[in-house]
Image 1: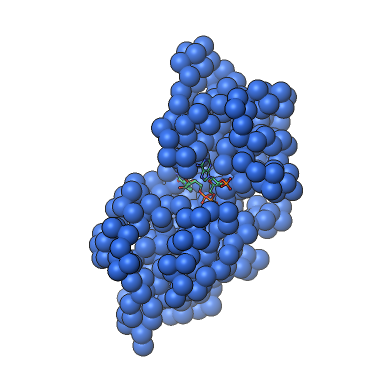
Image 2: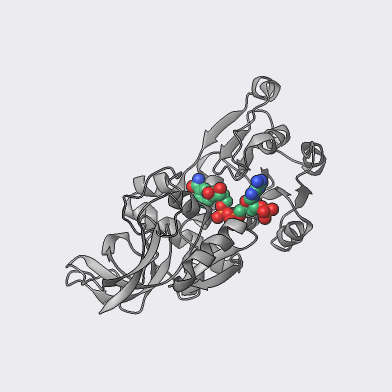
Length: 324
Ligand SMILES: NC(=O)c1ccc[n+]([C@@H]2O[C@H](COP(=O)([O-])OP(=O)(O)OC[C@H]3O[C@@H](n4cnc5c(N)ncnc54)[C@H](OP(=O)(O)O)[C@@H]3O)[C@@H](O)[C@H]2O)c1
């Protein structure tokens, strides 16, 4: 039996660098699980993998796709942690742009029935990033404020929703009125447009302590975020959508004694114990279901329209999901 697999041969963006090829469906080893992958997004990180500019290189030829979800189809003889028919994710694995794949059973997280396979495909990266950035850097208490840019990104939408679920307030920077409307629907407390000196508006809107800023953009935009932070506040940088270097105001740094740190969810997940991994996704899934949180909207493309899916992701405006 054969199935389709996307294989990256080079990062030169030539027409031939990413090809769909037929491969034999693998048989799981004793500790492995065969999964029929159903959906996988084209995230900004995938675009960087394709162009060879991500934090780690894909060994070529290799299968791209940093996250996804599928249904268990066959179990190795020693596997007891999941069953045929379970929807699963594999948050520490890559290579999701293919129809069938064997995973080590220990790497799989079973997704609870309330979350669809399609939504599960975008559970590993962005919700975990938002959740961990709210947990790992600053002790936050109900009533605290968080300020973030790219707030309508998938990460930003999760930040706004998880924060609200914890009784935290968010001040959000976006680039369009449609994004303002979306964030307010998701429970954001305040939204400002990315205009010159937008920090002035943020400072007026923020009415309590603001110890944490989340930066997915960089450049001057990040400097404006720091102007809204309290003394000894922390700016966590997790993305650089503007592709501009972080701008740091010397006065802010010195007189407010700010902290600047980076966060990469892949590194966090890799160092996590099996227990920490399972409990992270159990907590995230529980919160999503208990609080009835909304997954970002996505547009579906069949795997056979991979080139169109990549162009749509590059154009932005919506999360792009491959139907595998
Ligand atoms: N460090 C980590 O562990 C980690 C994990 C997940 C994601 N990320 C990073 O987080 C960022 C967002 O990822 P995502 O999947 O949530 O993205 P997404 O849903 O595709 O959203 C992209 C966001 O970037 C904004 N944007 C695009 N170009 C911009 C520019 N030149 N200046 C300002 N904003 C710009 C978009 O705003 P408009 O809608 O206005 O265009 C949108 O809010 C990416 O950089 C991604 O690589 C990092």
